[in-house]
Length: 323
Image (tube, rainbow, N blue to C red; front, side, top):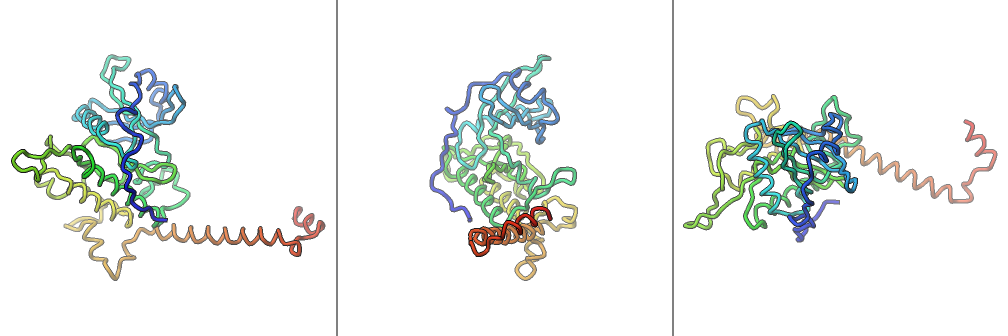
């Protein structure tokens, strides 16, 4: 069933829900010393580890900043400011943060988030050959629901926050899926707050400059030095939508000599749309149909077993057992 947009915007996640700060030794213990077995992802400014908090045993995702990377400290500050000012069911929920020093006296900063058991949308769309492939492909209904979830998160950021927020780095690896396959937008390290200018309240300006983003998802106006705006997120969302339904990254090798993902899809519409649809989407539909048929067969078998006229004799059952 396709999800319908809900009018309720807020969840229990808020600044008052943040637990008291967690210590560096606790972080070490919860990740088993930042074991590679606990590593679940890495990005521009750090790595993400799966951890278990000793207090209540809850499973969390711990984003550890690589402070040697230029811009990492600023990213940490941006993300903390953004996360403290927003709450929504389709945004990744933060639990607490840690700003301390490690055992060598070096600065240490991390953010602790709710763990998303189904990983990122990127993994579902592009599982690596070395990774265990998903047991099932994303169906068209699941993809539509994920698209609705992400759109709901952007609507909240752009229109329902006290100060509008531009995410600036919307892409499948920053969309996380929980156990119910509900999408949560995360990674606000590049987020920007929009401020209204005194002379022109209708014109928004970003409170900081020096935008960075991900190649393939950055809107053209940003590349040309244009002002950051909510329209930039809308462009990135459009690219994400095309990727969700085509299974193609906007940075694939086929996109050369001026060809890009939007153009590829535009050329296929409307007669040749099936040529650009993600093949795994079609496989998912076949899997769903197969599951439905198996369920129908099981249901018929149960009905048959309950019918006294269809009950086999003891000898028949015995023979079947040993066959």
